[in-house]
Length: 293
Image (cartoon, rainbow, N blue to C red; front, side, top):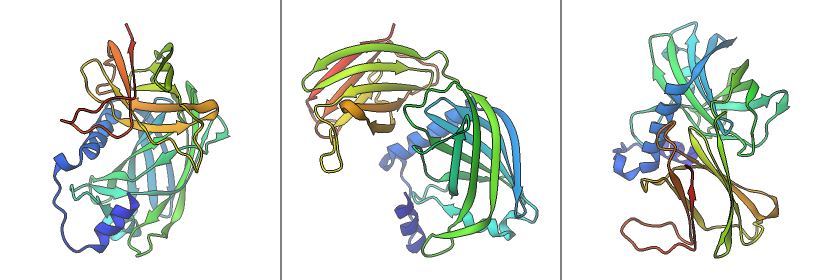
């Protein structure tokens, strides 16, 4: 995404946004709204260099944490140095973005290494205040219910050609939160079709997690490039949020449910050599149906 931001900033021509051309982007927006709806109050603050950041609400489901933050400056925001951190969305959809920098995270005093994030979404509230919503994908193997989060970050400056600028300041937060997915259902599958074996499936209120035994152990020189598609009982493809290779040929993938709390009657898992194109008759290398009732 950073490459797109560079291209957007360096290109003087306007980009006309067409939602039909960016279905994944539209899914990201829907996911952001779902997370905002189910986030719970946290209310922890940190101030540095004239900027007070408050995490108003958060949503944690073991596989990701969503932060709903309020940023309040001592001087008008658009006249402060923090305006340098705000950029236009590279998609030309009118959104404003901001990246945190030097992110460090701990759960229950253990430092996290395997997590990912992209730009957060900025909304201007008043002359001194903006909202920043941020989504961080966690390690798919994380299974902690009651979590104490310690989060530290800085803010990256965009108004430099090399995108390496940093704004002075460090913000630190410490809060407790409980996973919303205590009702997760686990299904042992252990079925083989073709070269693939579906080992297990976990379904929560927000996501589906599958564990698949691959035909070989992926490596840097020999990656696994086939596509694993997950659909619900209405035939709707579930958006993949993260996939990771593990030991003993086990691959873990997380897909988001369409609606929070809407548990399908069954899940279809399909493996394709090439990503299936709508309207084309693509034959799956392996297929599985897992009943959840």
